[in-house]
Image 1: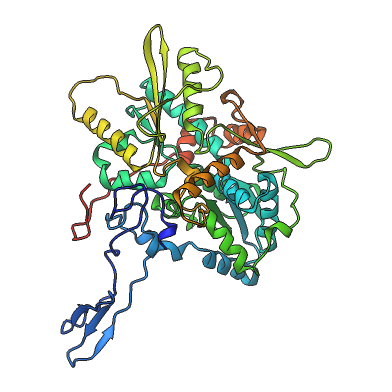
Image 2: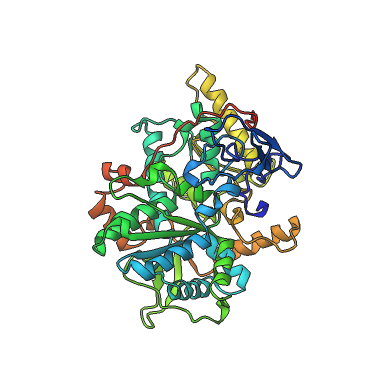
Length: 493
């Protein structure tokens, strides 16, 4: 399963890919009642129990779910190799079958990320809108009731992040600067395990678009369609395997309704597996579905034909946090309009970029993008140095868009990879997917968000406005320092 891991780090080599070199710290089930047995490891790596009468029995491996992950550093981001079965195409299909047979009142919702849509559109060689509509046709044919686009929930994430940043900058929100983006679960997992004591206060409390969509689907949509949150089975299609671990966090489980905000996460590449599992469906031969214009609408429809024309979105294939926050902060904090393209200063590698705003010769805003583990380490070191200093000096950066994968989410570990496996082909594939990401996209400026009346109504009627107490309760979360496990597989970073 090495090809499924997220693009953060390979432990055996210091580059930007993950392949855990060790086994999970709970590799076998041991019967503690029988203390007269001996345990050995065979040459093939299997565990064998030798009983008191000399009988040898191969031991059963423990089944570990996503909720069992101890984040022990045996794996760096999400231990996908032992956790993947909990959220898979097989599990999704089994749930669909169970609902069809015995749960007629259940509602199945699938939310698709725009990065996944871009990767799939590039793979099938069709327009992004065509891909989306054909995928809707397929998903509804297997029992899905609603298909949404997470760029709808991303608008909430952008608005909340901007409100949070401005409050931090004005020191009206008890959190320090620089504010670090929180949408990447690989980065969050790494921070919680490795640098939790001094990094976590800097991480934005705003939920990722996936988890905001989970909140909207389970607690807003459920009321709108008059059902319980537990009657909705919510699946997301994401560019990143670490999103499976994010969905399994206890913070996103509702004890009252006994349900997770996101029940199952499928990666982009798993969509291809799903097509095969349901009769080897040829997506290109499917008709293009009529899209729903009544709920969670993030599409521009032609007023004459009623057909969908464009997706609503923002600049930035990794979510647009840098671009949106920079422009809005410049305007609201300093009355400066950023005209045209943002001028970036590229660092030692293309995955580190900076931009700043000067007012009267003084640098008042300094933003950065840090993609990939090496750049993340540099940011963490700078924060650690600042934290250790007794002086209250201005931070080098005010906001950093942090992403674990080189090139960001468009190159997520769950995206469709180049068949040849060569770096050159993969780079070309990323560029092509980036082009598909912007295809059929109507880019919204910071002044145009919320871009739809529906988003504005949800804010006004359900949360009493952005960054309100209700919004903080529903759209924000918290992070936790995780104690490192004291075992031979622990790795010092």
